[in-house]
Image (cartoon, rainbow, N blue to C red):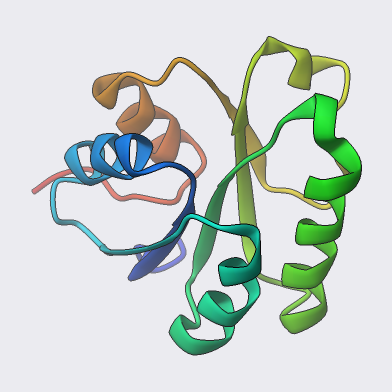
Length: 123
C-alpha cells in the first residue's frame, strides 16, 4: 500500500525556486516556504510539513549541515530532499530522502517528486 500523497511541503530556497515548485506541484499540495536560515527551523515547527525541500550548497556544507541537523532534531522521520548542483553526487549528506539537481525545470521537478513518492500522479 502506497503512502498517502503529500499534504504540505516546506521549500527552503529563493523565491524564484519557490515559484518553480509551485508550478511543478500544480496545486497537489500546500507549499510554504522559508528563505533565510533563521526562518527554517521556526517554519518547520509552525507548519509541521510532510517534506522539506531545501537548497544545499556543497561549498557551505557546514552551514547546511547545521540546518539539516536542526530539522532532524525537530522530527527525525521528516522527509528531506535537497536541491543543488552536480557536486551533490560526491558530497551527499546522510539522512535525506534524495537530491534534485539544479537548474530546475518544472516538468523534471514534478517527475522527480513523483519518483521519490512525494507527489501522486495528477488526476
